[in-house]
Image (cartoon, rainbow, N blue to C red; front, side, top):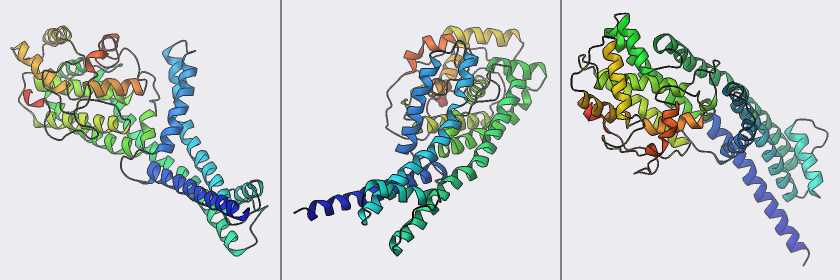
Length: 380
């Protein structure tokens, strides 16, 4: 009677151990190896609970600069915690496997597992099956640490390419970046005809952003070296400049503007999908956006005062601009909030946008991936 419950307990410990080890390995594969967007419960658990701790610390921050310094540590600490969590799961998992294979008690199983995982060697299994398990556990421990070390250069190379474009945007759009400022500077330099190069560059930038920031999600939270810069607000400035060009400037129609806009809002949506941010995947051109009609009129007047060629029909220009902006309006603001982007960036994180957040929170029409095809931009 006493043998049967003991056998069942050992079997349960063995199966639970296998599940823990497999979960840790799958988490590592999803987080670093799989070249596509994949939600992982362990990675999500680590970063979500770490964010709660950081949010508690942010309550005592006296200014944004202090908050920025605090949040700069969020992603790096999260990445360092991940292998520790994986190693802990592997340690517990192998302890359960050893217990299931006949090790006397949990204390001895954990000592055996820790000795193998950390390649200390002060405890080892004498039987051949246990010795082979020791070897496999040691290999897994080394593999998990090697994964993090080998992928850090890849992540920082991607981060560097992202930040190079964000930094260069200061020259073109000011700091904080402004779509209106960008168009004014190009006009003052007599280079409106060279905007096409900008759209080509940022179309490629958005494509890489979508690929890298969904397959390596921690990059979303890597902050710019300059507290006044952020990849989210840079995205918003470029997309708004493209929307104004397509809707308001009286210049020849350029398909490259449309391609840049599509690449931009699709990239932001893919990142939003990864973090389960809700948005309307098929908005109508006349759906509300966070930019008001009055703000657009002020922007139109400013561009006119700077001498830019504008379309004479203001109302049609407003409708066309709104038809473009509606594609990325809510995801831009939500990603800015998620990443704690710099405050008071025109049309992204300024106080007017915070006051109008209720207008942009719409339930999605389709769960998950956004539907393909033009959405609101035909008015442009």
